[in-house]
Image 1 (cartoon, rainbow, N blue to C red):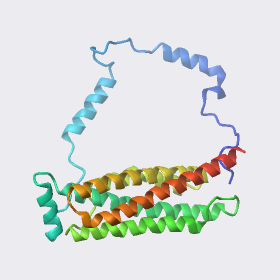
Image 2 (image 1 turned 30 degrees about the horizontal axis):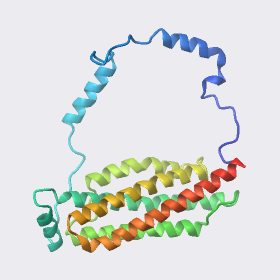
Image 3 (image 1 turned 135 degrees about the horizontal axis):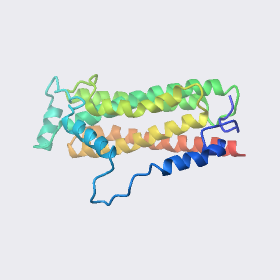
Image 4 (image 1 turned 30 degrees about the vertical axis):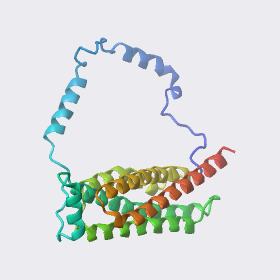
Length: 249
């Protein structure tokens, strides 16, 4: 497998068919809509699309719901007391989101380990499969920390909260990159960097929310997980830079 940057007969650009570019441009120019001011309505088509999207947004049902705790533990009662009129289920929702993301993170790293093991026969890599396994094990440990936090609040750590459902959809494209046999090491590291940057930012938010809910007993482990994620970002970014610069030489 090559690095994906070798020249080839790529016909996706206009330069691959210069004789047709002029006629294509003429065709497009003849159909340019008249200019409208900001106060005027949008051209036909765009207005209808925006209206339909707006209607769907207003009328849509919610993605899901945060399950009520099966057991009202003292920790959950403390969250309710601290947040008062605000919604304590927000913390449960975000804990569920992080749990889902970490679970998928384990699978992402496993997919990268499988690909790295295959590519190691053909190219040098700045890391070993064991290095990836350590990062995967961090994600697995974070997952257990979050499940334990949910359980201690009386929430159901096996339930999929709305934020968890959306998170799974958002990260699904990254999984497709990792598991596509055609993607290169660079493609996969770029996908992992996207995941780790999101992971880092999301842990910061969860820590702030946890502190706001006065659940200080969770903060040491959450901060440790955040520090792990920051280290992951540095490692993935460094590996990506090494591979890309190596290909450019």
